[in-house]
Image 1: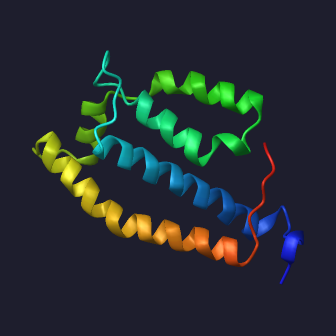
Image 2: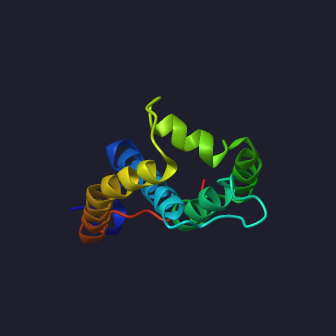
Amino acid sequence: MYGSEWPKVGATLALLWLKRGLRFIQVFLQSICDGERDENHPNLIRVNANKAYEMALKKYHGWLVQKIFKAALYAAPYKSDFLKALSKGQNVTEEECLEKIRLFLVNYTATIDAIYDLYTKMNAELDYTV
């Protein structure tokens, strides 16, 4: 329809940023489930958030936004607090919570991949930075 001339405003742009944010969440949760962590500080989730940022968002952000993200990482909760929040007050072990995240990621990942495939097929990806 638009080819390489997709508009940089409106619904196309909003959905583009939504899909990137959803990919960030996917990579972040998968990284936690895979056990990736800072060996010196195993209860911090900065490593996971940074990996997700590198894979999903960094190339679309200019220098200033990248620096703001790096600073914001220091406000990230501890892994234990994050998993407790995901458990909504239920008394579950960390492994039980991670297993529920793994189950969630099965369909979530398939959905995100389908959205990315759609954008690729429609040539609707925009590679500019903010």
